[in-house]
Picture 1 (cartoon, rainbow, N blue to C red):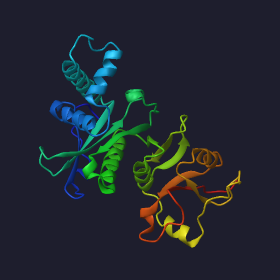
Picture 2 (picture 1 turned 45 degrees about the vertical axis):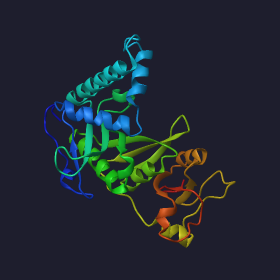
Picture 3 (picture 1 turned 180 degrees about the vertical axis):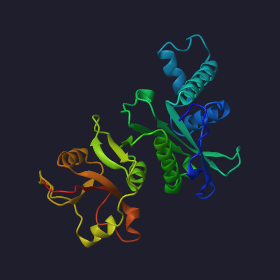
Picture 4 (picture 1 turned 120 degrees about the vertical axis):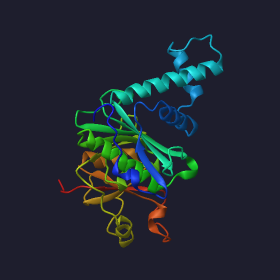
Length: 283
């Protein structure tokens, strides 16, 4: 995608309800500032934390007051993101509560397009879905699906064939969202605290109805003492990274997350949450 080309995904005109999605342009410094402040105010690195980090790295003079250090750190970061957008190393998705340009910003998301940007390791045909953040009082799966769809359209427009992402093991909402829109869980990352997920951009959403299979007894957890898994579809506790790694090594991939809300008023047959792992062929 050329540096200054105006690209707005199809989802920009859809409502969920009243959520309008657009891609932030590199010449829109005010919009970039709004995006940076949204992240800082809603659970990502704050301006205070960034100022401290910049001071440790010698980027900000130690004699600056705390207020001046925060202002300088903010301006430096805005400038960094603006350059990355202009060079098409990444793109930022903005989700607003309404179509007006000054409608409240309720969600942002980042797509990394160049290897090394934001520290992400990606191949030439890959993009990284990073930094999706919805305001706490606006969080819903519908908004998340819109942001994910916009990320996919950006990746496709830039010639990418696959989207990658990493999600903390305890971030069930994000794991469930990504699996629902067609990602597969293919990796337990080295820290054992996060999963690697990826999506083939030529595919759509995955199969639903897994909860019914659990209630029917055809989808279940493998025996606790089993080292080799037999069924073509199995359940793994979402917190059990050792078991998840064993399943992946045996050719399984995670395709869905099940928890209480999936059972629609029926008492769930297990506590907590479980990931559905499937494989096409038995070894």
